[in-house]
Length: 410
Image (tube, rainbow, N blue to C red; front, side, top):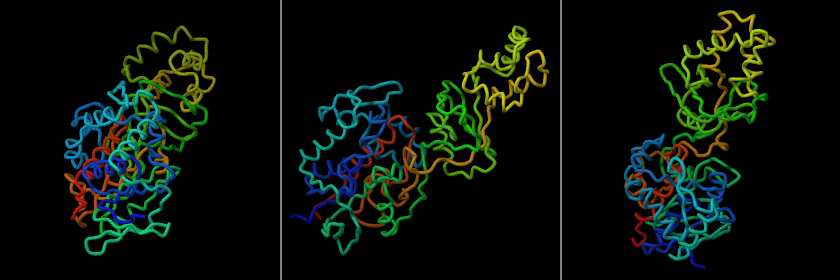
């Protein structure tokens, strides 16, 4: 059995496969080590199995959608652009389609087809793959890296690419091994945090669990920090999730959330004055009815009981509403408030924020600035972005740059 390679890539996810493909394409004898029973296990569940593999927008748009260390990604994204990603997969006989927001999917909506395209490239360029192989330790003696595995085999390599991913979705095999290796080699590790995750609140949301609101505004205020996102929102029994909540979570995951205000504008298209006019015009038609009856004309049925409970106006008749009561209704329509408890745990986050400090990585090559011939790719690096194909593009671009930069023949 061959145990000596020019390049060993640890981690068989999106970034790891891309690294191994381009390393092998450049003529390096390349081994890809994956501890799961198959490659791309997290990629398989991406986008609920549909795999939004990139966003067909300019590099500048991708930079704008990267929350953490966007400048670090400038060189990699220009070296392997979203359009390069599209061309790569189309040349691999994968049919693609572009949807709303320029999100690119396999035409089959099957992430397995994306993985098949990557595996085909690995085979075409003669990259070796070993599955069910757990790496226990990585160390360097002289110019050689030694990769000790649980199967009692030790591989040697001139270059190592760490593409071990983040900490999200432990069921896919995510772990902190790569971070520990990087730390062992002297790298600073930025504390991993959940990104693109639900926001847990102290309120009991059981009555509105699974309620989806479209075209609402989600506001966050903490001192001088203010975020406002417009779009769709979903509730669970104890959290806010859906696109705008996930986006907000990535902006606030490094903050101490004590004292933060969180509220939803249920009627963002109407100003307070417009709502006052609306109530004055419509309430007389319901003067002998309960407030609940009127609210059913302007709010989803599922949210009305909680709305009235927050107002403390159960069984209130319209003709008994004071001017102050009406202003309270309008205020709550514009600021349906919640008390933040925390962000959900990192395992639930779509991606991980944090990882190997970008200050210690060469952005043009993905090589460590501390250890010669040690490279990084993908989610193990402290870079994360919003939804829409931007995170996978980070994986493709950093994987390409790392795989294209390694020089296996020393």
